[in-house]
Image (cartoon, rainbow, N blue to C red; front, side, top):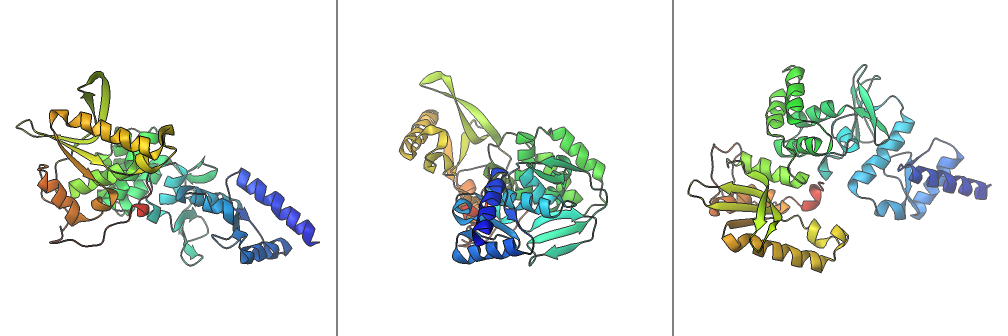
Length: 343
């Protein structure tokens, strides 16, 4: 009997992994057998009634884990439509790791919270949905609107920028959609402001968060992904993350040190050492004409005192009053890079 159950579990688990989902279960002998495997450490259960092989789960990033859970939950609850940041994950947008939970859904059965608040369900009738990444989710426009109005300006901008970069949505279309929704929605003013800044040029969500933080600190918005000709190879074009050109002609370049292009051995097929050498060589070419170059990390962006001091020291121009309170000294509360996890 147990051999038969074990065989069933193996078959069902392989099928779930094939479609990129956790294995879902219902009360019964199969469920009891799955729970025994969790106790032995062979399986993990990220949510009640959802299972995955522990070895496979460890290899998944945050986005993949979220999608594995969402696809299984969609099988258990066919009436659920994922919304907010959960829908943003399904659409492939840049969602900070810390915003992956609670999973967000709309349902016709009423608002409630499940599993200790790890799933938040809101009530809605006849919510327009699309199928994306194997789940039912709100449309791209509605998803971005909800994220911009509910979350901070930096994290909302990361989602909006990625919608323009990856989702084929234009900035004008996003602004028009937000305007059509009107002020009856809580957070409408913030969504409208965020949409006006959305830009497809940032290469990743962390660049969007850095740009939004610059604005919050009162600094002039930089030009983005600016092409710079290599003085030693005029036909070769290098791109810099941020650039300011001052009235006196001074050029200030901002470069975000994400670490990915240096420390990921699979990045562009190069070893970490090769990637590091390439970065140093690239920077030496950029500095031949002697612009000021500011290098900063995601952790520094997350500390308003440190980031403000860095921009101020290098002479980045301000063009409005800060929108946030700048601490008087180091907060020693740097936001860990893993909290962002943006692509």
